[in-house]
Image 1 (tube, rainbow, N blue to C red):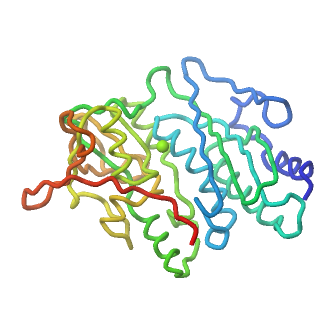
Image 2 (cartoon, protein in one colour):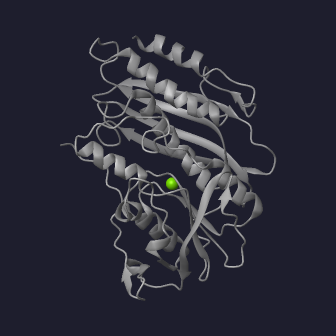
Image 3 (cartoon, rainbow, N blue to C red):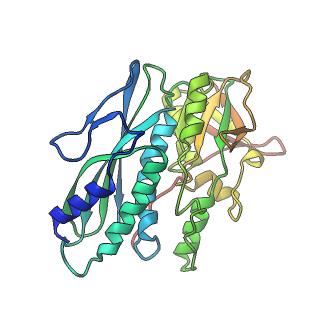
Length: 321
Ligand SMILES: [Mg+2]
């Protein structure tokens, strides 16, 4: 497929819909023009998806790859309590126009990405295309949040309770099956193949001013909680038996497995949080403690009163094998 034709295809697929009135100018000019609602600040996040690092074409169907690329960016917007507006895609694909790279793959990738975009009223508003040795997708997602009221990683205070949405370790459990050469069906309900960014939960928390700090779980609980501790200059203790382990997974993967794209947040002890927000379960898993040395900032509380420090062995993207 020639580059021009591909761009025309993308433009047609990405045509504006009614909800994207904040995109004043989308694909087709030198820049996109976005309109922010009054009193809101712009959120921008960027994620790079590289073949054989973040996905494998033999494991992940093309729509799943497109979905996962955009889900990472949307999850970052969710973690700020923001509202997504537009995304930008720079796509490198092997030897443009060569018969060795199937066009249906590109179509499937775009379908997966645009289906997810449309479900959150996000418009694909620009991008670029190039030849590359392997598939590379760089996605920029923009959004907005009320001025000075986005939820940061730095607001956790000693005594705050620690919460997670959904269940953890599900994506890593599937990855382990794939690495063990097991066949896994890439169903739409699979959190590994089609993770759901928690946009509504983030907005719900933002509107009520309940969360003191928030991050999305992309690298794994042990690593992402350490980011909150570092930015907030606090420590944390969590109770393993309270952690909602995904069905078919196990505690170790819930602690250290990545790519669940759930939200991890803190709220004052006095905050009354419902058991579900926007239909997603919310579970208290621990408490924020006083500042201390970050290297042992997270502690695991055993049932017998034992205390262990939690090593940060988060998600490392799978290496070539
Ligand atoms: Mg993030």
